[in-house]
Amino acid sequence: MTGLVVTDLSFAYPGRPVFDGWSAQFEPGLTWLRGRNGSGKSTLLKLLAGALPPLLGTLAVNGIDAAARPLDYRREVFWCGPGGIAFDHLRPDEYFGFIAGLYPRLSPVALAAHADGLGLGPHRGKRLSALSTGTQRKVALATALAVGTAVVLLDEPFNALDTASATYLQQALATCDHTEQAWLIASHQDLGVATAQEINLASAD
Image: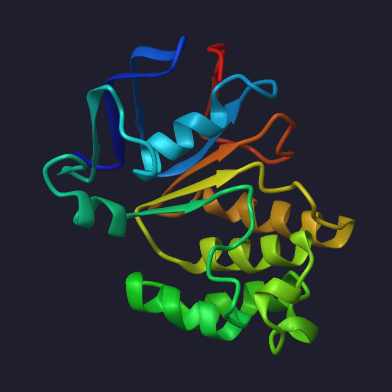
């Protein structure tokens, strides 16, 4: 089965249930995960990315089961979280090269275009640790837009972006609904683009 399939997913923090037997299917196209802050959006993306282990349930992307083949699963899922980049001793171009080694379908042509579109030109020779939160976010987003995995997870992608970069990202996302990838975007604000489906999360984060 194509896309990302979630079956009977359950997860809880100590004393705080979040998901209980939650199921969904995400086919290629753009999905907006809606919800107020604290509604479970970030937790869900961490679970789908393999960064958090579910208590129960199964995850599969294009038939690859996350529990049975975790490395193969994670090669097909790219997660762009809200925090800084872990390898902040690298420069953007070094980070791009590192990611290309993990995700061989990353497109250098698309990456260069998105890096320029997000205004990263003046910053590509600097270490990530020297960049602002917003500029680090642009590095991660340029990577996500070009990475080529079957599933791309974006958590609050517009946070910390300047107006020009937010507009560029909105335009880039508008083309994602016509790709063979499943794009899951968690955001408390309207994406401003047409989506294949919307899911409103009402559970507690």
